[in-house]
Image 1 (cartoon, rainbow, N blue to C red):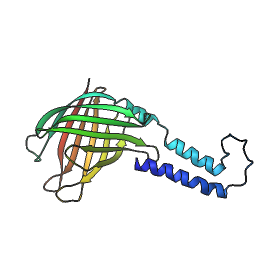
Image 2 (tube, helix red, strand yellow):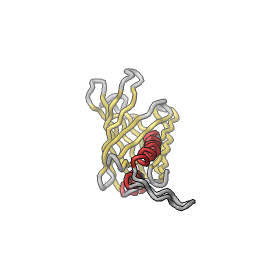
Image 3 (tube, one colour):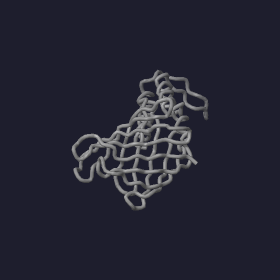
Amino acid sequence: MIRTLASVLAFAIALPVLAQNAPPQNTPPQGAPPTMSPEQAAMMAAYQKAGTPGPQHAALAKMAGTYDLKIRSWETPGAPPTEEAGTSTRTMVLGGRVMAEEMHSKMHGQAFTGHGMQGYDNVSGKYWATWNDSMSTGLMVSEGTCDDQGSCTYTGSWNDPVTKGKTIARLTTKRISPTQEVFEMYAPGPDGKEAKMMEITYTRH
């Protein structure tokens, strides 16, 4: 939202500046939209291109639906995982630009609710994701790439409650079938080496 608002404000602020530098234009008839300079028209076209959903957003839309979840989490690398179940609902919002996810499950025996958003930035050419949930007041932000089969690799980070520093994680999603995918999260273990911390199997109804 902040990036979008900043983009809109930047465009709004830039228009008067461009107007000052633009050559004189014939006054349009009363009630007609103002005539834009070539610079203004180019800026408008750039913003429209950046905000128009494309094939990447259509690919995200194919992931919409309701899923059953099988959750496996490792508190200690190498130890048997904790296994729990849950559900997830994915919907497209903002005119097909962003996929929102609502997750309900248990985590370490406690009721757990999570909210995620995922999209594709036409400007950077990368996919992005955010996540926050009922076990934290912070936000995880991730960025990465996806292939034509819908398998993705992201790098994400969040503020660690113990160290107060950033924890960097590798997040992957593998498409198993049109109705099933597996999400995995890898983060530094106690020895600082990357270890598998979580695995979630999504099965669509």
